[in-house]
Amino acid sequence: MSASVVVDAHHHFWPQPTPELYPWMTEPLARLRRPFGPDDLRPQLDAAGVDRTVLVQTRSSLDESIDLLATAASAGFVAGVVAWVDLTDPEVRRAIARLRAAPGGDRLVGIRHQVHDEADAGWLARAAVHRGLAAVAEAGLAYDLLVKTPQLPAALAAAKALPGLRFVIDHLAKPRIAAGVEDLDWAARMMPFADLPNVSCKLSGMVTEADWAKWQAADLQPYVDRVFSWFGEDRLLYGSDWPVCLVAADYGRVVDTLRQLLAGRSEEARRKVFGANAARIYSL
Image 1: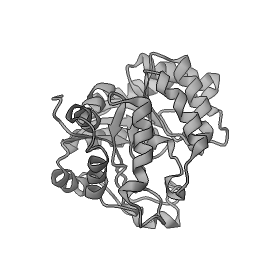
Image 2: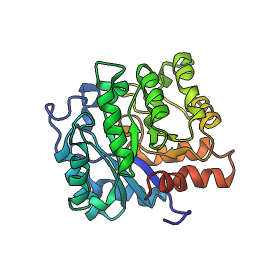
Image 3: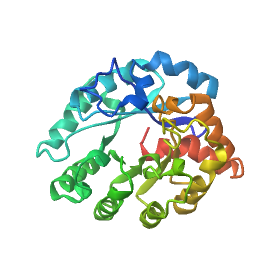
């Protein structure tokens, strides 16, 4: 992929959602309870100057992952899919092979699980999970870390135990930006990842609080600067988190805000964050 291509490394699609399949769509997220697909996103990408995307799973469902791969194959602009498999399944390699054999399977670039929804904050430290992660690494895929502050120690241990696996932290691990106070616990647990070259971080999901309508770029700047100091220009990726971002901002405002926040960085740094890093880390 050309180094000049702009990549949105994190967005979602879903058909008509139901409470049973999407329990995380609580009442504050009610505006998301409708189908979102390629025809909804394509005009937003064109207007924002975004060329390619990475489509990310939303449910612990192999069937959803197969559907996302097929959608990616037909959409044209979706360069990669981060899918779901049961990492604790002894047959996880067979599940990955099934995804690769499905229509659009050539677009499989990563695996993700909703770790922050697990009751056990140490879920990522389990031996069975590590075996599954080893299978992800063996398949040449990346692994997205959907975690919050309580899960960061186990995520750190997993990243240290599997140096050959490319880990990508989603949404900066969801610091409490909207609270308006410095999240010291988050910072203390995120900082050690700076020393792990196999871990990257997405500049995504920073404005998805449904009741945070008056956010400004200045609210995000300290967090963007902090992760930039830890991960540097080679390990940060832009992601819109569309359509979840719609609870607080439209697509254009999300991408324009990050461009504003990175305006003081070099042209080379911006090129990497807005595409080159995603192309390399996900092998797009």
